[in-house]
Picture 1: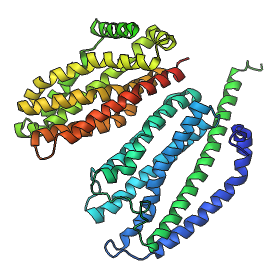
Picture 2 (picture 1 turned 90 degrees about the vertical axis):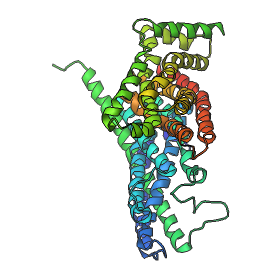
Picture 3 (picture 1 turned 135 degrees about the horizontal axis):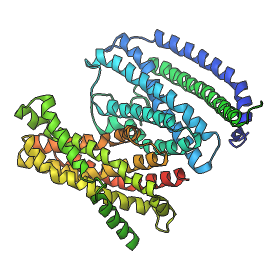
Picture 4 (picture 1 turned 180 degrees about the vertical axis):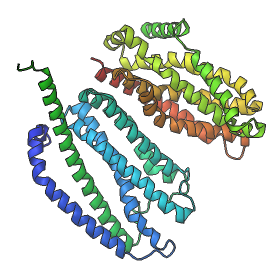
Length: 244
Length: 222
């Protein structure tokens, strides 16, 4: 089973129909475990119970960047390898990524209120994630502005690759500009600074959210393929001379 | 090389003739800056503080307004197809068109800055700083905007979609442009750091912009 076998949309549909329930089930189980562990995690000595926002906020923020990365690979698939499903993957990922980015912004804002004393601060990390959110919305507007999917796909692919420049800026913004948002504490040289009591639930939640993304993404890709089939059937129907 | 020189001459000549509309950008810049005192009140101290930001915002919007012209007219009369098919590399042609566009749409904004600075109660050094940062930053606006203009022309959609695609990409330029201008006026922070980042943004978009625009023209036109 290679990526090329999946190029056939019918084969993709039949394969994903089999694995989608399992993925959904795994996501549900992981989310239950992760949420239970998050709820049972001890309060932070400084932050109290609000530290638990982290278990939702951090996976959302990771996924916000990860989804743009997935879209960039799909964009390469559209432009370089001409993979037939690449533009379906890119189109289906955009709204999901926008939702993760929005949730990261909202949860961060709710966490910022008790901790920093403000809902919003024009700090480098927050600003660059906000730009990411705007770019997701611009990309969705681009997809919606053009009727022909393959034309829209190529334009969106170029915009996605240009926008990918923002990803390292987001990742390293906390190191380059020493502002309010805390620097990386989980994935850093010399090991995590996070205590195990927080680290394990966080990693479980991150895996659960990744599964959630894969599940939603595959479901959205299936919908997009079916939507395109409906569209071409409708156009064929409209093109036929009337029976009478 | 002669082809590129001819392209620059042609683009500038077309833009300066009737219907070219190169100087509309400057007029728009003037109008936006004149609107600001009505919005925030004619408080000279406040205007002095906001001045660099107002000038930068006006220049950003004015350069956005003229982006439509970068490829649209060439697409309508068919010369864009000739450019795509010619032996000159399309990336170089795009960079040349961006240069011509900047000369007729970006440079006049910078020339107009000292006059507008007077309206906003900026002193000489502050006006000079804003003009200098605009000189370093507007190429980045033109070059990143060119990507959006190329996408828009292949999709036959301009206007609002172009603005939505281009504005997020231009936020870093705005941030460092205003930061450098403010650093020069207040003197609390060094001017060099944001200014060199601004130059770096322009150079980086010089690398990325022509390639992305050329790729989108190649893939998009049929």
